[in-house]
Length: 253
Ligand SMILES: Nc1nc2c(c(=O)[nH]1)N[C@H]1C(S)=C(S)[C@@H](COP(=O)(O)O)O[C@H]1N2
Ligand SMILES: [Mo]
Image (cartoon, rainbow, N blue to C red; front, side, top):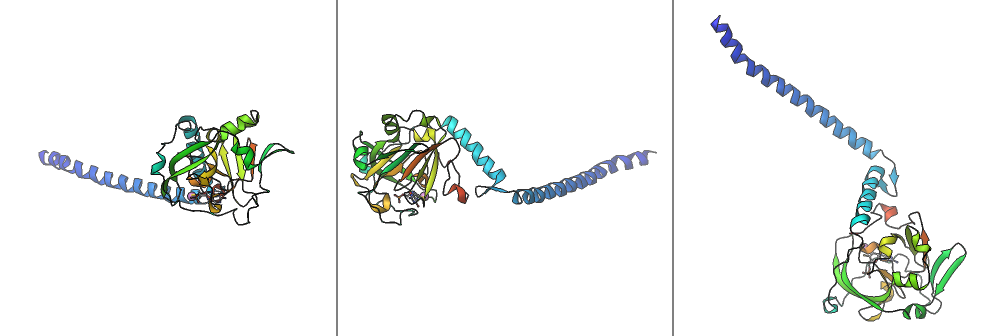
């Protein structure tokens, strides 16, 4: 009798250990299958503007979080002496045609069929604003650069576009529509967002957006559209060159 008891007591742990091993193995198989299945499901999802739909949803959720918390913060400013003199050139979509500077106008679509046309002289009449900031490209480089132009917010105010800025987005395009971006209105109206006509105190070089480009320090470089032709207001996200190719639409900090 006593022997039997002893035997039982000593067999109990081993029995438990085997059970645990089997359960662990089953859990391992289930999780492994779930991971493979999850990946297949994710891969078979339709895409939304170049990104798989569930991933695009995450980007959009991030955008909501950022617009509600960070968009009004000022980006770090630097003394002009810290700005580099050899500014990198990156991206020339929409810049291939020769630019006719005498015929160039900034087109601001107030509503369908009603477009405000401004010359560079009109724009230069407004107060000049300098922005020196760390320009960040999504490819991974950054440099401190110095731009001058007019506050976009002040320009929109000056031309009484008060109803228009109630829309959710501003769309911008090059004159040939070869490059285009869409930007949330909060970032458009950010105090450091300017329409720049100078770099390092001199007119913009051709490949850097002459005669007028966007400088928007709360966004990555992809949104700083060079050579603006047309701007328009929209409640829906305007087409965006790099978002259509899978990049983040918001592209901000
Ligand atoms: N018209 C136009 N604007 C553009 C681009 C472009 O290809 N075409 N590239 C963008 C990208 S990705 C970056 S990083 C910046 C680079 O500005 P820079 O050439 O003055 O350094 O311009 C942005 N604006
Ligand atoms: Mo970029």
